[in-house]
Amino acid sequence: MSCDPNDNPMPQQSHELAEKLAQRLFADHECVIATHADTDALHTHIIINAVSFETGKKLRMWGKDYEDAKDFADSLAAEMGLTPLDWRQRTDDKMDKYFAGESLSDEAKYLSGAERNMAKQGNLAKDSWKEALRQAIDEAKTVCATRAEFQQHLEMEYGVTMTRNTGKTVTFVHPAVGEKYVVRGAKLGADYTAAAIDQALAQNIENNERSPANKSQVKDA
Image 1 (cartoon, one colour):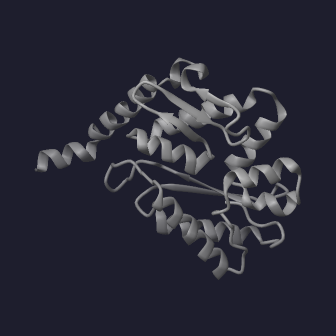
Image 2 (tube, one colour; image 1 turned 120 degrees about the vertical axis):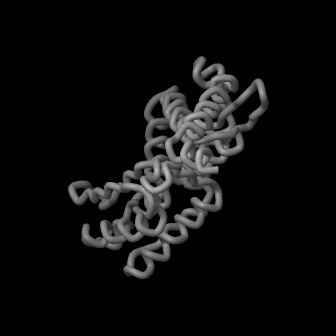
């Protein structure tokens, strides 16, 4: 969570905002909250144990859950006198302004950390956006259970869109380069084919079914 540099908040404010957000959204999960006051932009990390200590189930947030979380973060910021973020602004519009160098100090607040990192990577080297894309896909494969969730997670978290998502073929568009560079999963490597993605998603479902909490529920039933 990054604060608007024009707010010039105290580290305690950023940390308190993150604590309130974690208590509301992740009440059944262990969290570590760390605030960076040693960088140019004050920001706070919330590190979440994805497995609930109450139920043993894995945390899943998709679509409306993310929107509600961001809206809640904005409402907390407003209550504390901080500037809410215009997170609904289109990712590709943000990227265009980022690359054009238009008012970076103001515009940067509308970019998530992932977007800034991916934009920088894509702007520094010819093919570095492909590695950023692989990293985004790798992360999505660890938390999703279906192709629909996988596609939505990539778009919500990284601005990555899938122009093809069929049983045998997947193609991706990285926001740093746009639809001019559509890449097939197979071109990224053997771990990024449709079959490899399906195998990872199926493994997530199997792991969830094997969790101690789910075994206990089946036995009790």
